Amino acid sequence: MYQLLKQEGAARRGEFVTVHGTVQTPAFMNVATAGAIKGAVSAYDLKDLYCQVQLCNTYHLHLRPGDETVKKLGGIRKFTGWDGPVLTDSGGFQVFSLAKLRNIKEEGVTFASHVDGHKIFMGPEESMRIQSNLGSTIAMAFDECVENPATYEYAKASCERTARWLERCKKEMARLNSLEDTLNPHQLLFGINQGCTFEDLRVEHMKRIAQLDCDGYAIGGLAVGEPTEEMYRIIEAVEPHMPKDKIRYLMGVGTPANILEAVLRGVDLFDCVMPSRNARHGHAFTWQGCRNLLNAKYELDEAPLDEDCQCPVCQKFSRAYIHHLFKAGEMLAMRLTVMHNLYFYNHLMEKIRDALDAGAYRAFYEQHIEALGRRI
RNA sequence: GGGAGAGUUCCCGAGUGGCCAAAGGGGGCAGACUGUAAAUCUGUUGUCGAUGACUUCAGUGGUUCGAAUCCACUCUCUCCCA
Image 1 (tube, rainbow, N blue to C red):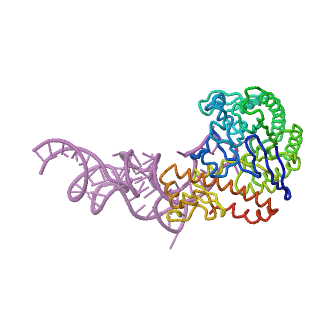
Image 2: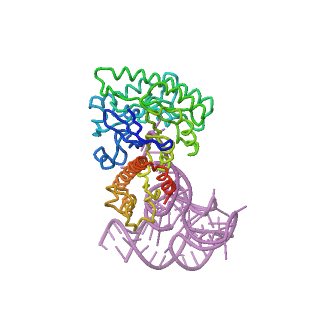
């Protein structure tokens, strides 16, 4: 359950209590799609990085190693060695990202496996069953993440269907949670708001799913190619209609600046592949902006990735060394940079919470928003 | 000493008369990445006063309207025989 501790404008400081641990919000979830954070970072490292919640993916784990297998091995938390809360994404986003291979109907979606091309059918019930087998703390509703741009007609039909799917998810989850051999009888369900960039569809959809009394509410289908200002506009339109006593999760977002902006607009929870993916591609996030360690200018730079960072990587290694590791194709380059970036994101959230606790979020925002968006 | 082959742009390597500033790799330089089919993708990589000009394919000289490509000699390297 979510408890609002403090509010400053729309920005919220809260606490989300689950059977697998309490999450201090605003929080960032570290993305471990197939059960591991890419870049050779294990659950073993996550404590050092102040990770609170790990996110795993239904579709990927269903394909490999198989959700039944994960269940036999004690569930996703035991399997990956991470004993904190885990949120599993529903596979809805994969329907979108595997766009060329899909066929969407009322019952669900048929699409081709990216591993071997075999046909997979997934609907609300299938997604809930898989997530139940994975035994995550939080299951996400099975939704359709519509491409941008989309026509009004398609967006309307799609988000109405997503609302109907949520009702089915809720029903199936209640059934699964009451089964005797379920891994987590207290598995939570988050509903997902859709409606593309159409404010009226977004609001209407939000009002409708708010009545279903989910354990949390997510805003999905943003940061999929629309201008950033559009995203902020949609959050502002939807937020007043989100239940105050439920946690709010902005899916797949974002840059450090995006997070500051979204917290300002009342969002509590985030996840994004950016800190890990960009790290693998040589980019380190810092309080002064984002730097590309591949650049020749770091060849003789003995400073740490971020002079203001207390992470294990910045305590020991120089930009010059990490630059060299990237040039030499050493996997340590990725590991170190991913670790730094995840620490940076988690630490950024901690600073945001500190500022909210002190009633000084607006000042914190003003102080950092410009620098965080820079490229250095 | 005799015979055979080879020298191409930062590197490897294609090119055997004009469509060649020269394929393709690699490397270099930069960019992208937002619920991860992503250790991936894109651009660029002779010089300049730049929709054109100039210099370059070991060196020198030659044949030709035109040469990285043909000829002669020189240099260097590799292999085989002594």
